[in-house]
Length: 116
Image 1 (tube, rainbow, N blue to C red):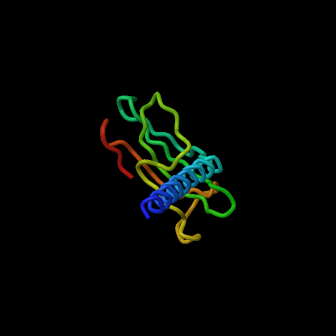
Image 2 (spheres, helix red, strand yellow):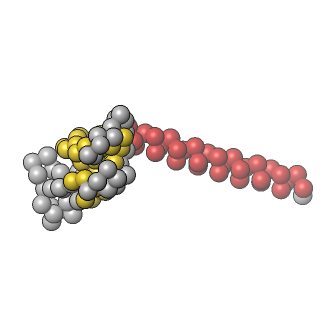
């Protein structure tokens, strides 16, 4: 009976690893299908940071979504969702521009904070 328990444990652990690896690989694959199109960049007063407004498109089965990220001025925008703001047009209920982006206005309050 002890050997049977070990075999079951190995099978269970193997399945957990297989499911985790599959989820990881699918997540990596899905990220490659998405793309960001920068709409607007607003630099902080001291020019050290910037807020980037961009549209994220992840293919035909999803709609466009508007995002905003705060990043260091020396960094480039990563191919991922925004770290500050994310919204979609609610199936056309929210006003959007010609590039399917939501109309978002942003301004820096000081070197540390921006206003939407």
